[in-house]
Length: 130
Ligand code: THU
Image 1 (tube, helix red, strand yellow):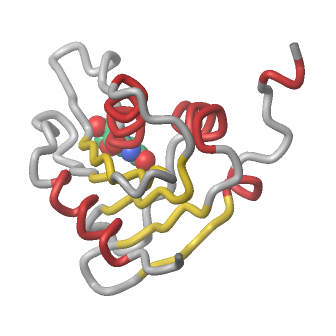
Image 2 (cartoon, rainbow, N blue to C red):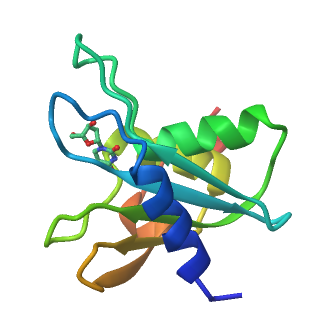
């Protein structure tokens, strides 16, 4: 199923809850589980700055902690003109929990782009290295 509109809409909705008081850069993410459930996340900053958790990881932790396993798409939404790809730390976790899924990047001007995780995260360190 390649209809990503619902996933982008969920990422936008989560973005409304972003706690980005320090960077003012609000991010929403959403994961689609193979069960069909969608899990949203927003970035959550705090006064230490360094303990910030990105929207993608919040969505992953929500889904995993709810017992969900197996995902088939991820969306990331910001209002930046150039689309926002997941940071390095999030790529590591997206690879671990979602594998080679499509990552749909979107903004509020109708711009979208889909990247494969294998392209965003070539030569990963993962369980196959252990
Ligand atoms: N951020 C995300 O939530 N996801 C990304 O893909 C990129 C960065 C957040 C972290 C921080 O709260 C803010 O954006 C600026 O880096």
